[in-house]
Length: 399
Image 1 (cartoon, one colour):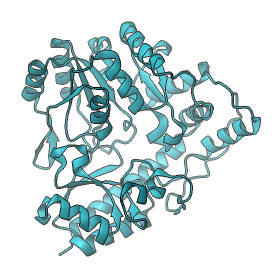
Image 2 (image 1 turned 30 degrees about the horizontal axis):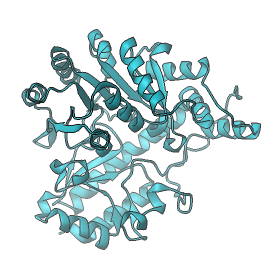
Image 3 (image 1 turned 90 degrees about the vertical axis):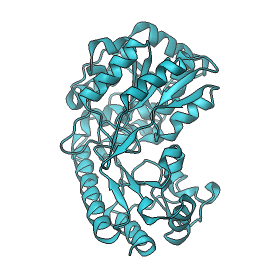
């Protein structure tokens, strides 16, 4: 559906506190169901407390007024919008035929596991990592193998010797890469990605690169799409992208999966077809076009605000929570906090956060046993809410 070009951006007041309760909101409305006190302040799931771009809202309102929501397939304008964004922000030139649409990146990860491995096979990860990656492996009857990231002087690194050894010892044929990495916040360098690619090419390992956080990278760092690392990687790669994190649109369930190799693309499509998925969410299609073609001003505003939130968090923790260390994020709007300096057990840390501070963070152990003693906090909220959360932590953990 062609829509009018939106007017001026209206949703740039990121300080505004917007009530999200009683909107069927996973972040706010399901604490009790998930075993938390109803009055916790949530900083767990990775979505934002900000209204999306008004240009997206205008497009959705126009689509809603049409009043018919039948089966929907995207036309060329949709693919042009995806290509425009990737070229402008990531120097990535994509072809129309590379794009396979799915309702989300986690769904795509599961489809890749089904398409490229068999039941009982091992799939490689780098723990601690976004926990649905482990879930889609185990839930599909495969085995998780991890080449753990190594924390050195406050920064996580890849143990390339271990990575290759795990591939050889376990007959690995599929590697799920998180880039930028959630939860530790690394933005992998060209050199690091090239070494990964070389190892995987040498051992015939396919790489699924989850790049959903690609649009949140802090000064001094640059996200490099796996496709751009080496021409040869196009033969072994599946790159997962989505508008959902960038413009806070996860509920519209739409993702763009980039698969240059025809055979891999056919195998992936076959897995998607077998899952019974076909047409996209009609509102998701409109949102992608509006966000990627007209959402630049909102995107610039939200990334600046999140950067300022990070500066605020770092300053506050340094002054008031010296026992807690911030693992400096290079990307994502999530921060990995090291509570090991409190000398408390993981159970004690969680209990104090949930029942004394009345906060709902993501406990580090859900990202793997390597996350013990850590917590993940979401920065994509208004400054006043972030301030309240940090003050609560300081009352419980401060000296």
